[in-house]
Image (cartoon, rainbow, N blue to C red; front, side, top):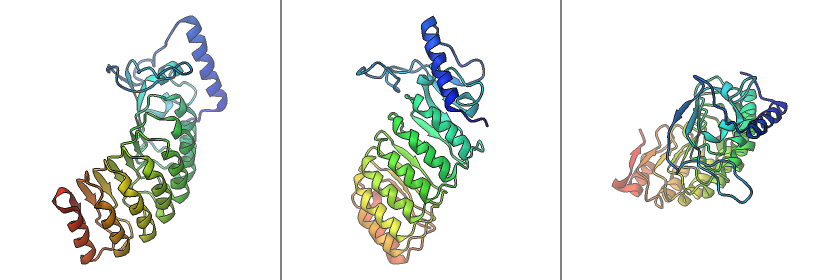
Length: 281
């Protein structure tokens, strides 16, 4: 997959200016993207200084990286209408992720970024982290199964603080470890709109779980919490039990595949009561 350069970005801006001067809008061409009519309530677009963002005239869903970067991307004038980037299992590597990061700031109406099942690694995650704060309309971020380690998680944590509209954060099947979990815990209090948080399969031990437990009570809207297949034991479980007591909206808790003894399991189940289904295994 081709990488967009700074020169290409400047060229895109120039094309946008030329089209405006001519009065033309441009479209994405046949078979590039999906377009669906929407109401006036969705998204944001670039406007004049001090002006409120305008709603996109249609939902544009990107399913090919080449629509955004490379020698023949879609017109920049259409970027304001992109609400979803769905590039699941596209073999996107760190170089592709860096190219994507160069154009993300132009996607001002983006609500969903799905990069599930790629291989962006720490380098790619760090590049994306540099662009994420500009996506203030983002509600869903899927980075599952991307070989992201502690360094990538730490970079992402710094960016997540700006994404206050985020409702879904999926980072399961990575390798963030305790250091990554501790960094994410620092960002969670800013994400008060979160309803779904998946951090399973991430080698999180007691230190990481303790840090997360300290931040979880700030997520009063949280409904689904995935912490399965990590490496914490009764110490982390005790901290978690104290935290979930405050999560009155919680309906589903995934804890299977950790090193919990019978006492820890019973304590967590007793804490959440009948309002929440607990999957311990």
